[in-house]
Length: 418
Image 1 (cartoon, one colour):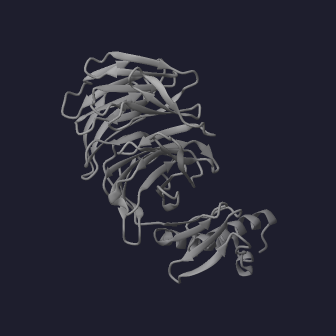
Image 2 (cartoon, one colour):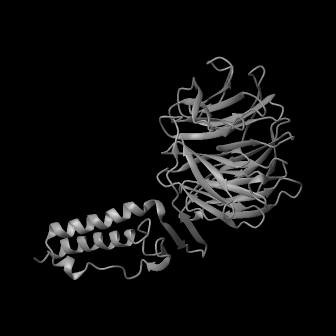
Image 3 (cartoon, helix red, strand yellow):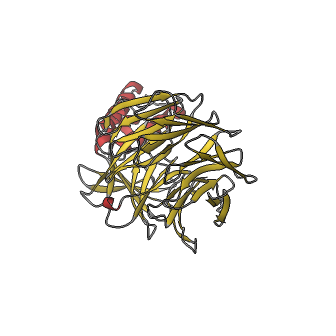
């Protein structure tokens, strides 16, 4: 029985993809990239994406129901290999990436019922997170249990800031307020800070925890007295839509990123701009300062590899750009300096809307490892859990617990999700 041309074309495409996938390729990739599949059973590499498999004559001439059965059998082969396949691909910029699909991670009790916007570490075993469900959750990521849930905001949580060596923390929200909580205190907020006209998008606590700086899309920064809850200083810069704030350790300075593509350094003594770094080409989404206060990282928005970078800056007298980290294909949403215990060299990690977490050599800009969290949606926030663990918030799958693995060099693997 001969197939009509349109049906034959569809069956050929199904067969072609199924055969490629079943032969060891984890996903079917566009043909504009050069891919190589690694058959883990035979350890042989074969080119994929040029030419391709064609529907065999015996299959082409068979009855339709038999063809469909063979296609389903090929897809069954694929399912049995999903957890044991590897792919390598070369990007247009010449960087070779490799991803190994590991065993399914452990599923803990979920922290939230919707998208997680932000996660921050409170202690070596506790994290604080917030999301679209309007709740702030204290979670023990070592045991996989919710410790406490705090309710008070009327809209999505946007930022979390924890007080160093304390049980206290702050949450910012789209409801234009900031609330102060105590893990061991009452269920109601200890303090509430209201003063912004739009969503609060920046939150930073002073090293001595006596002051709180907040920023918003209303172009303003407010400096608060934590003890009294009163606003002590107010500053406004035209078009300065704040995206993140970070207080420099042991200094009176506050680092701020903005949608106007600039990074500003503020002096909290009078809340005035002390320095403006060279303007970038894309929106600056996030910033982080090193523990010694000498360097900082900023992250860029972007798409298709344009922008999508992190930049290392010198916070000392020169305040020059030191290095750039390029390799993500969508907006870089978060970045952290990694503890020196994680590697023999200074390293940083970035998370992006492209579902990837990357580890970089801080000095050279080389990408040391890429972990793909497929199915997670955009990655929204990154935090250091302990000396070997990272916490990564995502749009679709809650919070991912990542652990450093030294079996074959520095690598990250996902061990749990909540």
